[in-house]
Image (tube, rainbow, N blue to C red; front, top):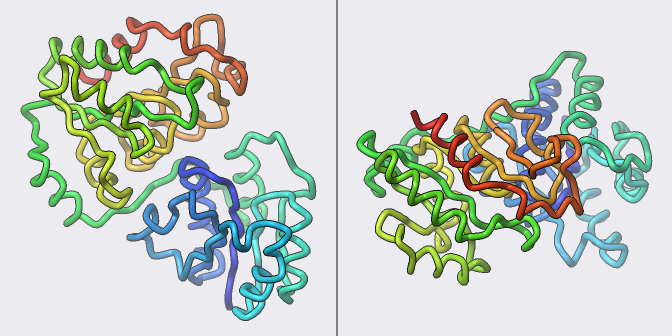
Length: 314
């Protein structure tokens, strides 16, 4: 039995939201699955220590467009899959499965769109596996990696270790870095803290502001680290505070309480799936009303975030 799962969404957070359903399909069929996924989802790093995966087939610019359809169909066909589970309503992926000769095709209703990501995935997978499923992702890491990160970065109980998620996919989704600097300063006065700055190589400008700020001495930046190296650091921390980014979803998937600051993204879809995510939304908005084009970065107060963080540190 060979099973393919297609989950083509772009982001890290998207992929982690699907983790319980990937595992459930693997368990139901009693096989390791093959996963067709975009490279941007970083699934190869996220799931490096998981045992439900046989392989990851990457979607990239060479095979993820109409021009690459033939190449992708050949790649899928040669593997001779018996089943495919398609986590979208795209007719293209259904046609791909047919062309690849897969006999058993299970898919969202065609043209499904504007759904609540975790709810649609949950209903679809429960129908296929015949049992109720938790929406909570549980990302596995090897214990030796966790211990190594703890030793390497001198993470201990003498300080509160906090991930600061200052990055975001765009400026409207990013709380100002000056707010994070002041927040960290206030938290450090409340309790001795060490801050791990979760941002990438495209965020050098805001990282430099952190490095030249009054909190620089208690910060470690992670822009040069891989996802594989960042995950065990997160697992050793007490709290995540930051924007709605992949770092927030990684933290929640590792069982770390995560204060997510939602300014311009669907707060309900991207927080309600996990008990570990505490959403903060703009003044005058609710978790359900905060979505794309809310543009609320200036309506989230430093005081509100500080009070929430202090609650989970005390």
